[in-house]
Amino acid sequence: MKNNYWLIKEEPTKYSYDDLVNDKKTIWDGVGNNLALKHIRKILKGDDLLYYHTGKEKSIVGIAKVIRNSYCDPNKDDKKFAVFDIKPVKKLTRSVTLKEIKSNIFFNDFDLVRIPRLSVMPVTKEYWSEIIKLSNKKYYV
Image (cartoon, rainbow, N blue to C red; front, side):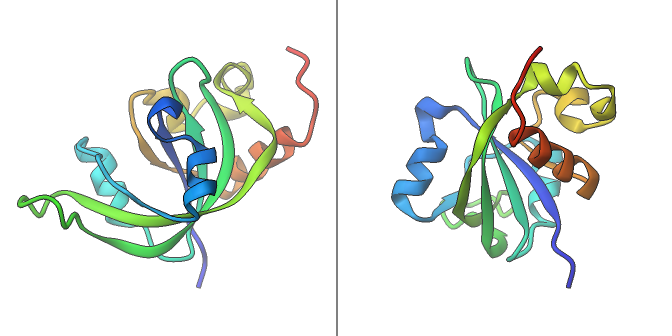
C-alpha cells in the first residue's frame, strides 16, 4: 500500500517538534478548520508527515509518521472533529523556511503557499522529495 504525504503545522511555543521527540508520540488534535478536518479523515497509519513550525519560525523542521488511522476526537461530543496519532522520525538536517519555498516557482501550487492558514494539507511525492533535498543543502537566499 502506498503511503500518503502530509504537512502539519504547529506553533512551536505550544508543541514543538522537540516536544514530540521528548514525548515519543502524541495525539494530533485541536484542528477545527473544515478543509483541514477533511484532510485528517484521509490520514492513515504509515503516512508520512512534514512538521511545520508556525509563528516566528515559519519553517519545516522535521519528519513524523502516522501511527494510528484518523478517528473521532474522544474529547469532543461533535463527531465532526477528527484526530490521529503520530511519532517523530527525524529532525531535518536544516529547516526549510516558508520564504525559501515561496521563492521557488516549483512550489507555486503547494497548499502551503496557496492556503497559508491551512493547518493540515496533502503533500505530493514531488514536493516531499524537493523539500527533503532542500533540507540537505545550504540556504543562500
